[in-house]
Length: 309
Picture 1 (tube, rainbow, N blue to C red):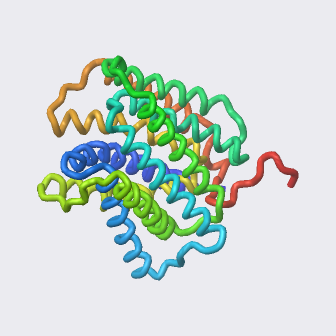
Picture 2 (picture 1 turned 135 degrees about the vertical axis):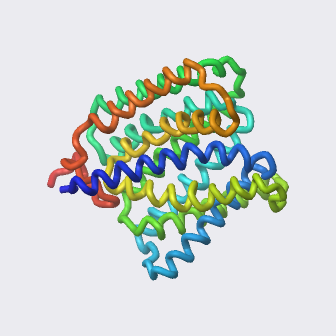
């Protein structure tokens, strides 16, 4: 049974992931002003993977093996390769509002995939919480929903949400490895995929020249990747995948507040009202659900809920 201390640490780690991950959107916006999308993402994850591998060597942490390695590679292909490839490509033509709404559907996709993988039983509360949070994101970005969006770009954002959802479920499906080694191998895998896509699309692969780009890239490497994803896997050890996925509906809330602070943009009433709906949805879908202490979900050790014991 999970201890109250572990529950508090998981909630604290989730809060840090939401704060850092929400700021990632602002940092990516700055880095994209100078770096091509796939090239910028490849630089980010390659540098983060190198940093984590140095930590693995210093701490003499064991690398994933066997089925654990297979799960880590799949996690990297889906979570860092495919998800970011679709996302960066789609965001070239999808405005922030529709993109945020699509990504806010990630908890619903995650819950559906977790049920399909027999990790979680079907429950109505996660669906209700996800729907309320999704509605809150719609209210926040209601002013930008009228923009014409190419169908292919919109489908790319849907693929981003599905890949991110499946990556979380995969991370729990296979035998667990240390969060640092898992992310080191997974990010390196994703970086290779993104670098190949950068070459296919013939992107400019220039080194950043502006100080703002270096600051944004440093943040994305040190906090937005190395720290955030390690903490996310820690949360995933303690929580169901569908609960951990609620980070995606809180990211736009943090990003909106950060943009208002850094770029001195006013927070419109619809954004405030939508933010309250998002928080209500997160509460219904996570905190108010079955207590986590009764369901100690562990990476790679979830019971088959439909199989005879």
